[in-house]
Length: 380
Image (cartoon, rainbow, N blue to C red):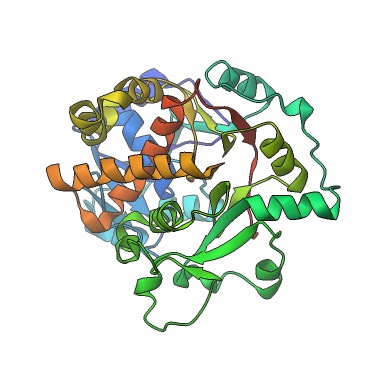
């Protein structure tokens, strides 16, 4: 069986051999979901007959059974593949030597690097590349320490409210120190609270109160919390969302300076892809935008034809902008639900939402003021 390996920070120029192998074998994409999604999108239209499915180490929580209509196999499903092991497996990213050894033991032999893979996070050169596309504040004017006086710290906490999403099936991964170490502007919200039948309180706020779509959490994940924020928080000038495992590396001083300099959006440093994304790689999303959201058509094309990807839906924004951003996402998702065949429980809508975050940011790249900050593992 052929086995094609890709690493985040390497690009091995074996395109011709890669092309020959893919066209002669059946390909299965392996890796975590977001990376696999990218690998699929970068390859499917060049090799439409060869990408047969996905492989993950094991299925946990809400991991899908299908992506883009293709079956997602686990390591335990390998015996269901053809016994001659002639298929080709592509690793998207974040692999471990143990898992590679496991696949080799199961018949995978030749290892190559894929020429299409996401790079590491931005360095200064890549940040400069992003600044050619986005209107950004001069970060040199920012005080990046946390030495605000108590009065100004209180101003930040009164004006900035960041919701950190926790779900029942992730709560066990947090310890007491993690929970108690949040700064005063970060507050926990339970995503999918309506599905927590034990009703055990795990967060300050739940997304099943007021105007909510909490019941849809299995399909759209943290977007149920984003919806709650946009439709129920009318009190704070700035709102945003972190996830249980990741957030933005920003402190009191930077938030204070962001308010003072009238920043519209604070977002994580994007990834830079090795090659531009092509909009045809997601027919449903692009078709929906062309048909019913024409104001975003150019932005969608710019996003898919560019090399910039904002991951994880980590956004802090002025309250009215956050509402507009979330309303855009849900308007498109509702249209897609009503007009296209999708697997509701495959989390495809959740993945589309991540693309929609990028399209929204591209749409307003020159009429809103951005501040880029690093992403961090928030609780780990």
